Amino acid sequence: MDLQTLSSNIAKMKNIPTKEDLEKQLKTDVFQVHFKKLDGDERIMTCTTRTDLIPKDKRPKTENKSHDTAVTVWDVNANDWRSFRYDRVVSVSIMKTI
Image (cartoon, rainbow, N blue to C red):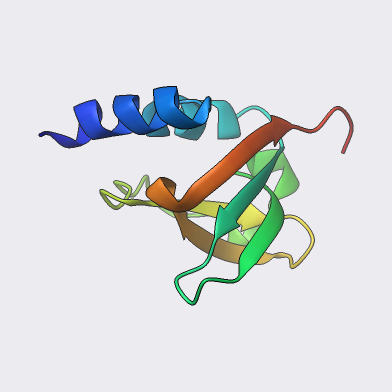
């Protein structure tokens, strides 16, 4: 099974956007992502990839291709880059104001 099919199946099963759609939406919006960490703990992270919300000195210098299973985001509360595994996402909700 290819990664796009896997992403689509996970999205349908969990009622969340596909990995590709989530990465696209993160460029314009801020989301709360609820996911399970590798150690089993659960976390809710407020995140985005909107450049206007990332300090200039922390913005990516180039457009990096994302990892096949991970989503790299700017954690607006920690003010740093974080990532989570897409297949461990429990839920995704858009933030109305930030």
